[in-house]
Image: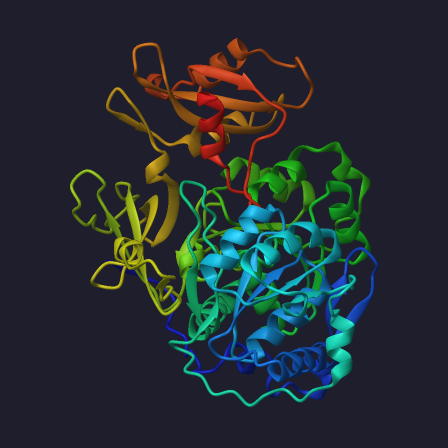
Length: 527
């Protein structure tokens, strides 16, 4: 077992609302809390807290409280912050819903979570309303934030000026949020995260990230995903920083918002790093305000990280986590200049980790020097979920008798405690007895000047042998051939790791958090 090199932090026994918003000084109340990146409209912490309490009061007057589950289907706009924390202020549970979901997807999550109320936005209304009708929610139980016929808006709820309720909960056991795991390899499951889970993870991470009140954080990663929820929405508010919201990713708008709003701390997923490193449009904007970029949600190659840092003149960090851990478990600290950028840094405070051999099941010892053998990463700490909603079997499969969460990710750890993620255990390609990490080949493919994006999966050849196949998006159609790509890879890897098939496609399918949807690529193979 290996621990964090940092001392444990005290985790207050508070609800997430009390942890973030009680006792703000007058100066903090007048700080800008949220800026709409598109319009430039802003609200202070004083206004934000007032809106949270008004939403909580309006909902409590309708009987919403502990035991109620409320769905929130909304992109990153300022209203999300008021409604999300307003729901939590009542003691109810928020199940955040992917803005890209179809009506069937929304219906499935509403049904599985037991949600009896739903908030949405007019552009998402058709799918949301279809799902609401399917699960039996009437118009009175569905709010449309910007207004739609027959439904109350956010302005309507704020105008009721109902007092916020007095709520008593146990932060350690009360479910605050119910996000759904991404489902890249299986059907999404409801992840039960308590108030203590959320409070703990902000407290564990904030000392390493050193976000300060004068920072402006660009919030392009979705709040409905645990990454955006914790390291943007909650951490920014705890540090009294300003959040600059962006409802969807568009490169030109992303760069404009960074420039016009002088964003200083930017949280991204690897696909955005590829654009920042390679796209010529980046040079048309003044991004000198950016001092730090942190990438998460999927592995980031060290060379790509260095390329972004050099081009923007900023510090590049990387972190690792999963929804089931609220999500952060490892981080490269802001001041750790000697940590390799292709690692995910050190284990955060209050956590214990293990590496387990996928071949023998034995624990892998921390090496006296150099890097350990690879093994599945197991983590334990106050940020680990209560379990999967209504699925005891899956919970027991994920969390063992000692309380360790089995991440399903293959990692190595150095003598100094620096962790590097090798790949997903379920995604390793097994070629003639060798294990090949797709992420390693993807990182190499992205170094080719003609490759804009890449994904690798295992497919069967004519003899039934699993081989690596690359799906590529190129910078210019016809810029490179499959044979040239395979030769390029062969020059840089051991013979068993060579890419043996190539297909050019228009876009690599990815989740909203930036994870490659390999199941979609596998489905393409069998179609």
